[in-house]
Image (cartoon, rainbow, N blue to C red; front, side, top):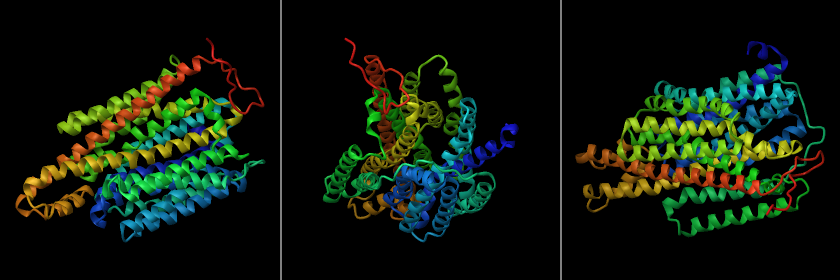
Length: 523
């Protein structure tokens, strides 16, 4: 390892990996401090959802265009611009006076993260040309990402307990300064000699569609799923997504090449990536809410309690590499999705039974499934396309990952809001026969501010808090059930793709091929 990092390519790898790690660190640290943010800013549950969703939305929508911009104008230059924007947005987050100001700053931070991550990945790929060296480099990169995921909850809990939640964002400033210095010192400038033109209509239609659909999911539980606002946003998002597909079919250089989806194996791998992100990776943000709001743990204790999940996410990719010697990639994907579903089902039982042992076991199994998928999903996608389409496939992989995180957080957040709000109203009805204060109590408790909510029922304070926490647990039982069903559905898609591919003889791609060529199904 020391020999690797002593070379010029190794220093590029370390610098690029640290840039990618910063985005992982920020995402997971913020997940730990969300309940504290809600209490101190008086935020609603929808506001808290936007703190995460606004960041991931801009991140997911701009990853592909950020890569194109970096190829055209210089990867080192765009990398530095991304670091600068990320640092300024982090400062704005630390100074945010309200929840609305915070998630506006988080949107800018997501833009900075996209223009940081895309060139960071590109400079790593550009630095290693030999297949063996490139595989070793990406293994090192994956290890750094996994270690960051393990440390993030602990760092978030420590920051929250000692410095306050604002430092979860302010700590990015010195890291960005060190990273910028490393980029200036270690990263040579590089460009694509034949860059693809930006697909502006595709970018606008895709990002607008995802925004409207996310907005509908977040506001649905508050305003009602049949309300005019929710229905208009959902229909508008669906229309824009259909427009995006129509635009991409007609463009000479589309952001998303739909011809890749002619391969059943590619469809199965993308479905696995999306489901992994929406049912396992998203738990890095949802589990801290469960541990603090349903189980009553402090932020520091929740960070420590996340270790079974984080360690399994770190270690299981190593098992996946060994399994790859004996099982084809689709089988490992299906296995990982089934393990993820099992972990979510154990967490569902833990949420209903209030059992610490079940919670630990569920997080370990859930992290194991996620770790197995984290190491295999990218490989599964890249293995189903010709080498000359690797850049487009990698962009689709990364976009489907973060779109899955966004859809998972917004969708599962909607499930949580519906289930927890209904359970709270039912449990607290005997304490407030008139219902005069029930709505305000539920609104405060949903955001995790149980102490403030309990002041509405001073004579039954402990009973009200206990009922609210159990209701939160009931809401999370629905969340884990929905996540398990999503993982199982994706496993079914993977199995379908294997059987579908078996009916076709897919020859290896020729040097000039644009996509895998399909022959007539065998009878």
